[in-house]
Image (cartoon, rainbow, N blue to C red; front, top):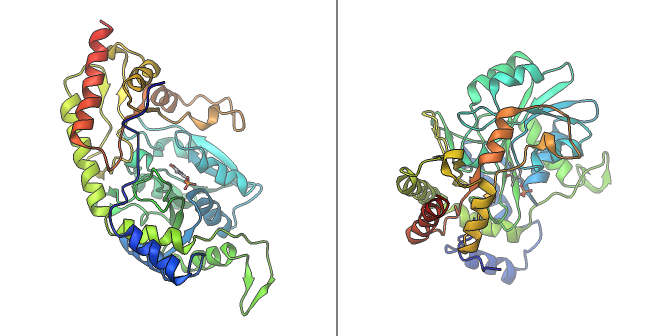
Length: 370
Ligand SMILES: *Cc1c(COP(=O)(O)O)cnc(C)c1O
């Protein structure tokens, strides 16, 4: 077994992370009360251009909490893209509602607004567009459909901190949005999540449910079944330090993606990741498609890279094909993207030399197979 020397992602922790964490330890504020939680919520909401943030222990429960705060539950349907990380659908299932899967559009790989209309039924309550691998979904047509059918829109921006749609930051486009700060995301709190929204009723209800649904003025009287979904001050301390560096992280990712594309552009059979003219992709994953002309199949590419110490991953499997959600649908664009796509090393710590090494490995494997 070859040791991995170039991982797909690794956190960059070279700012004031240690200083802020030390402050938590020396002050004793390690749990979910403490100044960093409020600071992180405020700073992140400001980063998105949104009024309020509610920090949570991870991104999956941020989505569950947002849905719960919107009173989505049994009998309701929530429209999601099939090509996403499984958490998007699981959070819907936790509420007792049913996720309804929609195909991708070929251009951006995100939920196809044109296909959403067909998925709407009288039970539809919400749409969760996902900004996959850092590229924003095409929100305007989606928001128009949502408005026409009175549906709520929650952005799953877990992979797209700082990405822009027509100049506006993701997280500010729908009724609410969620982010993840898990270790391989664009900034990290170890594990962590956050809801942002301008809707005061929603954020207040999310805050209430997140804290065991404590009755105002009496912390041990509960009027509903709430959750403990809070973020700790330790997590938030990391988050505040990471957020101070996010503009640099995004600039590095965009520069690395441009360098990848420059190095790979003359290799036949590789389709580069998209960037629509209205989009600013933050390249959470540098994610090209391996076409038949490349001469080596996607899974063999992953294995050959692994032999050189390079970690890579296949695209997510379309969720409608997984046993717990199997719907028997045919969603051909997502299925085809999932079969061809690869995530190459994409972390903020990635160096030009490492990108050269990955690109050379792709080039030589193609020669070897001729
Ligand atoms: C990472 C991710 C999540 C969940 O985040 P966690 O913090 O790992 O729970 C949700 N949706 C998408 C699209 C993700 O990539």
